[in-house]
Length: 235
Image (cartoon, rainbow, N blue to C red; front, side):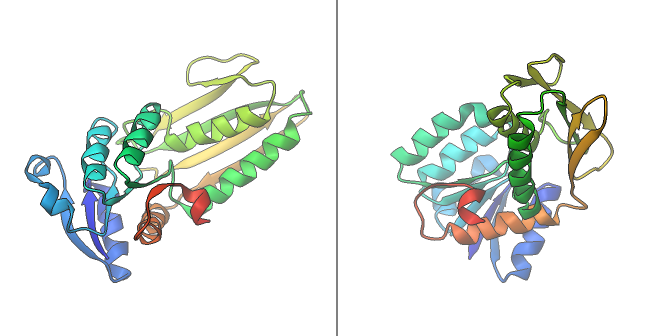
């Protein structure tokens, strides 16, 4: 496949390494130094565009890429309040979009465990639940997209929680403790606490490789497809 990378930071470089190992070609790397000079003709040379830029640029990027009908794999987070806008734009353009808050296969298995545990814990009201996420100091969005996904899964299953917050702590609010520390790739911890005991589940990424592999597999999956897809379609 011919792949364009939109965003060429640490994640973009990791994706490039995995792509080359899987015999793909990186034909263009888009960053802030060349983004204004990239034409539609440049974009149309790709079989897929993998978008890992910033929350500030992702919406404009997605519209530009979807306008050329290239399959787009987006791993940037911090934009999901605009999801319906992008969804409508994608369908209008007969485009192809694969989106995920986390491309790691392990994290997506963790999502399933989280949902299952929350369903069980719904009837045990003596347990309060909290969430902690730890990421590197360069991450711009707080809380992480993965943490938001986990929180929304819990709220859907746990009747006693109505919303999540990074500031507020009360009986109806799921508190997310968002920590930025060093170069931590990503750690997410769900804790159910009672006076008697604690129950915890955790996912801890050792490096960015899992995210990069998942993004490339998603790009391979999107070849010749139209519509909107997620990791649920892939796993």
